[in-house]
Amino acid sequence: MSRYLLAATTLVALVVVACSEQEAAPQTAAAAETAVAASASPSPGASGTAAPPSNADPDRVLAHLKVLAGEIGTRAAGTDGERRAAVYIASTLRDAGYAVTVEPFTFDLRYDLSAVGIPNASLKALALTGSPEAEARGIAVQAGTGRPEDFSLREVRGKVVVVDRGGIPFGQKAANAQGAGAVALIVVNNEGGAFRGTLGDVKVSIPVVSVEHAERARLADLAQAGSTLTVTAAAGSKQTPSQNVVGRTGDKCEAYLGAHYDSVPEGPGANDNASGTAMILELARANRRPGLCVIAFGAEEYGLWGSQSFVKQHPTTGVRFLLNFDMVGKITGAQIVGDPALQEKVLGLLKQAGKTGFRAGQFPPFASSDHASFVSAGVPAVTFHSGDDPLIHDPRDTTANVDRASIETMLMAGDIAVDGLIPVR
Picture 1 (spheres, rainbow, N blue to C red):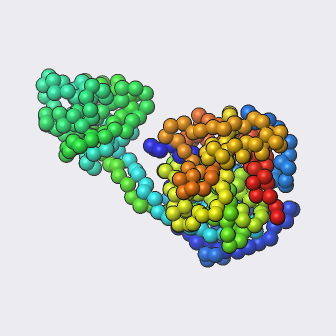
Picture 2 (tube, one colour):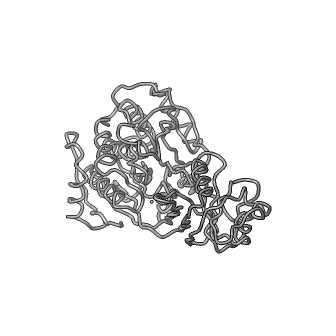
């Protein structure tokens, strides 16, 4: 799942291979990469835990998840981990009988390497928008909330000023600090956690960064001791390569299964979203039929870049729906999120099948998933979501954060929806 605020281009063979129900368990990522390189060219909350109605197998989902979040691990967009995952996904879809293409795109990767250097350590910092990329060094001094009267009480020329958030806008704090002769400004949060701010229309030449409230006492002690700090503001963006992996069953895609396969840089993203990726791989294997295609989206965590790229590059007229899967490995409140009409249809199919533990839901503010790109392009789309998880975007989102019962329930729900929306011809 992408929370905004916060995605190696490879072309993969277009090879179709028939698969049997006795197909071997998923191969390792290393084996998949070797196979693809050799042929590279384009071409519960919820009720019920019985076996899925088709031959969709929860153990296969878990095996894929183990490779993605275990063997490959962190799959941040634009990294080798994301590329290796794309290779594995492409090989798996090809083995299931799909014609596979890897579709490259670029995304705007924002970075922030800002820091506050203190004696024998470094504090994580975030550059305020509008701060120049610069570094400055000076003795630390506190100046209240950065109002003019705070600076009149002490000499700050040539020094690094530490102020508290609040009282006046960040731009005014920065202008006041520079006007008083400070070489850098550190703004300490007045509540828990980090924050990003902006200087607005104010232009300054000194680096301006923010730090967490937890660092306030340490910075106060350093200022009291007259310690020297080094403030580095280093934030910006760069065009970075990623890729979508698309599996097709013919010349025309009438409907799609989708999931993003990238993780955040902080961890392996087992629930978010190796779980959804593993699930569409198994749903694709168990439900291969004309018109149903599969997309594994890259660079979702940095702002739905993969799905936005796909709808820009491909016509969506006549596409009936997208079923997206994002965080489906840990049921805390199983829900269907997205287009109301399709949402109602899917919930009706689940209810008809006796699966009554799902509800219509929505993501919290500043969060979304790849279904939103399709809805914006006029395609009915929903995301299957097992509920909130405090361990997402966290190093602890490992394979241990996913349970088989949740996988089984969400797989069954996806299988019911696919079969009801696009029956076998």
